[in-house]
Image 1 (cartoon, rainbow, N blue to C red):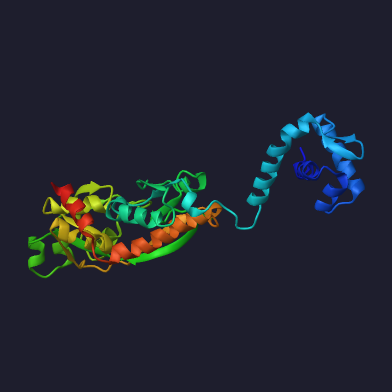
Image 2: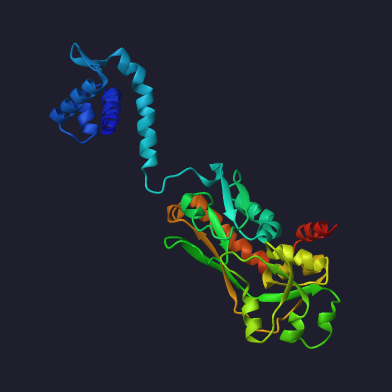
Length: 313
């Protein structure tokens, strides 16, 4: 099917004239006559017939007139550079894969930021998996957020912020009472975190270089889970500093500097190239970038503090 025939048919039905349609489409009259012949053959209908000195549409042509006009108008709008549904009209759910703490700490803040420009959108967080780099490529998620070591080669990324790992214990923990050394730190019971794409945490690598080994009594799937475990016990958690600072006051925890130097980690957001120019996806990425910096390094809202306390009750 040659869809250009729809444009010619719209011109013929609108003008009721081969010459008029030819002028509209910047064609010669013979070329438009040839196009009319092709339309007649495709539809098996004369479309326009002679009535005195004029051409009049057939019943089939009259029945098609509005549908053809609408289709051509929609096609023209679709093909205009930069044309799209306005952000305020987009009704869409975005799926974001991120560490558990992201959804808890600033999921609602992110949604509020998105609703300023896309009020009909919905946000769904899904947990990180150990080795699933194809989720963006397959379209199962819209955005991947975290320390992304397993992204595909074509995936687009941008840096959100860099984070340091810190130690966290319940307030008044005996570990805080004297000088922190690798051996003293490692002698405590620890809560470890399952790392996406890693066999073990970086802290363990640098402790071993210092001649110490942690005793991981509990392993949980997220840094936020480790913080809750530390708040409910005497175990030590090693978690990203931005997340720790948002919860220590609400959970009754204290932060301390690790006895070994662990390199900072880059927290990225990643997306597939097919979404690079999509205005709605661009709005999502801008909101994630803005809110992650604001909440990770800014003061904790009362609402989020209350949510943290509720998890301990």
